Image (cartoon, rainbow over all chains, first blue to last red; front, side):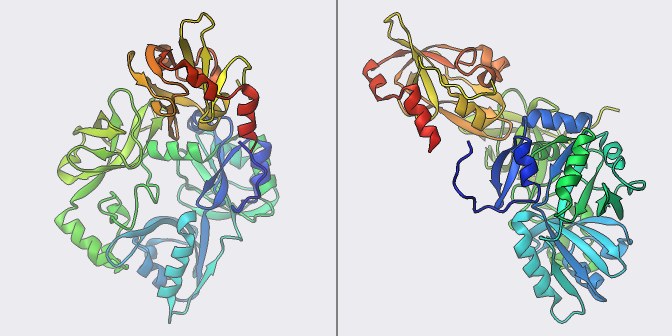
Length: 359
Length: 132
């Protein structure tokens, strides 16, 4: 339903593109975002089989620049930022002192002393305050760039081909972030994504985003909404902040120990080290429902545990999800009983990722 | 179907359900959800039907219908006892999107209080609730 009421929601520079494409728009973290165009399932399958394009301009950006930029990021981010080369990309979490996760982030090193960190829309303001509070007394600038960047994700087995067609030179490799010209404009192209597919994420000026979007769609990428983005990421067990990550649990519980380098002394490293050493009481597992039914966030698990993400997998055509369960029940193959609105649905713990390309 | 449609021969409940009263005076009715409901929900991927014999109470949920992204209750527009459920929706829940007033019907009931139909809306009145 579209109503004539004025919207208090923020809009990305691609809002008109979405309306023209027939998007169904919803409130997502205060932004009016496309949840789907033609349908979640077909957009999902387009990304798995060919290519799709997502507007992720609601995501925030923080630039950290100056002589102490590395020192600040090393203190804030869980990963070893000193290992991040110029033109590189790195995933990490931002922790409180007690190890609770404030956000999960990608950071790109643009220049020797200049980094760009992409935040979740719902956490951007808090992240920025956290960056600034911890930057006091350091020789570093923390810049809010949420209004300076639009962001498009082009994902799928044919995504690089599609994006390459509008780029002036070969695209950066996976986990690289480099300047290019695309459709005549300067952009930052990153070999990253949130779907488990090949592809790139493109950061560009808001003014050029609508034309770039149209050009990539013209080359064959299917517009895909946040609905498909969620089912795609869940099939490959990427975390969604607010579902699978929160202040209440740490990165070890979430299975993100691989991006934590406690020896860098990041804020929260003591708590993270303690959990790693003694072993977490709960672990985030992936599961598949056995039979009909779709578990959803908040469904409880018999004997302890809670579902943090759940959906119907368009690729596997079965209910899937992730849940925190007691560590002794986290092994692959463990049977779970999930209370789905009063009906007990059997499920089994599966290896991550739930979906793997057949090749 | 991609265009909004609200057939004149149905009665509507403001929670986006319809009832087709049997023309044969049998006191039976067929129930389903409206075009608006299926459009708001998106592609239906799962329908969990109640059992034959279940008692429906007007204005209360009697089934769940799920899209990829969300689950919604289906509200009974009228009170009654289920005499038949649309078993084919288990294998093909997308019929709720494709043909919400035909192949996408959900249950048939024997009405326990046929006078309740007076509280339902005709197509024009239901459409008016959507315009606001």
